[in-house]
Length: 197
Ligand code: GDP
Image (cartoon, rainbow, N blue to C red):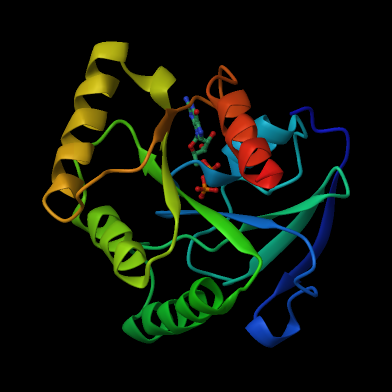
């Protein structure tokens, strides 16, 4: 799928103020600093669409972007940032869980995982929670250019194995680099496919 137009629509701190749910929606989420903004920019080929490297844990916003006037790309606030209080964290949970469980037009959640690391409990726990809720998700491994392809594949395999303890089937994954703009067309193709069905 070619992104012909990509526009910022709105930022919200309240799930009651989200745009009307009349278009299919795809959400992107992951640990703070996982490379989510860079991936959104690489995927849409728009340099400054999502802001990169904001100080984590400051503003908890749900950002809606409209793609090709046809579907919403949703940038969700990152989890697992170190510099935040417990109160902040539980606010995040309430806010995001409300969004993820109640948004009727949400088609799929892309969970971003830093491909440089061994499986992190926070990412595995988050995927398990999505599974428990019956929410459809796919895995996106980021920053693949930072190490050898062999190392990336090893970390991907370890993560999939960690999920297999909890899931009968582990969802499809994508290996991406925003630096090299790899793996992003495959994500767009997956979105296109879901949109057709
Ligand atoms: P966010 O907090 O998840 O939105 O993460 P950002 O997109 O702001 O990225 C965090 C840092 O990782 C920034 O310094 C980015 O330049 C860097 N980064 C993100 N994606 C990649 C990537 O694919 N390759 C490399 N080498 N660096 C990346």
